[in-house]
Picture 1 (cartoon, rainbow, N blue to C red):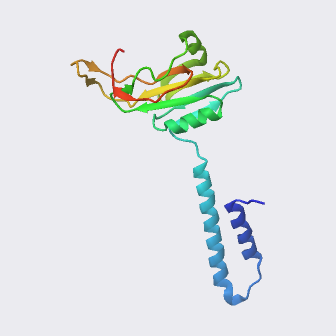
Picture 2 (cartoon, rainbow, N blue to C red; picture 1 turned 180 degrees about the vertical axis):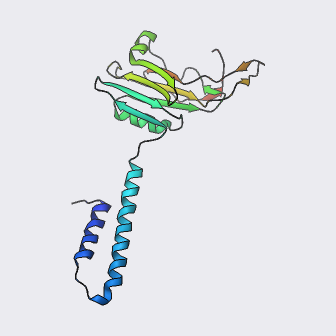
Picture 3 (cartoon, rainbow, N blue to C red; picture 1 turned 135 degrees about the vertical axis):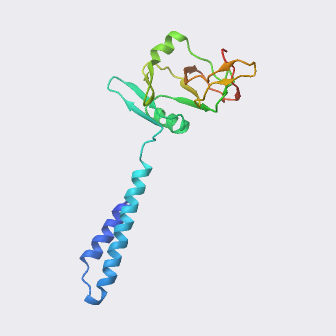
Length: 189
């Protein structure tokens, strides 16, 4: 039978507390109880950290089969991909540095009218960006694509014009998804 660290520490602590001992060993008993209690507390703390959700985003499965995502910070692409994958939404998230974008053509997007059925809505608010995905509309071989650039202040492009990096981009790929190859941001393209 496999037991967790916390269960083993609790058994050891109970044995120490119920074990009869001579009066002269009282100090050792208290030290052992303290050590076992500290080990148990450390194990519980470590387990709570390991299972804590990412502060970068929140993902919630809804009763109607949709999935609501709120991204507070575009910093944990791999974690968001994993969490959405667990909920049946294959996802590729590309968080790109300021003034960069993925080279066009790294995936083939589905038709726009189908895309609007998959991504029900996207809103930006004080808590971040929230969007709702209807995973029942996704077909086999389709993947949610999230491409987001780090927010920046307006900047002057190579052409002398002033630009602001776009917010997050959403799409759904049909078929294989290539690698996001970074290139300089191409405003308006």
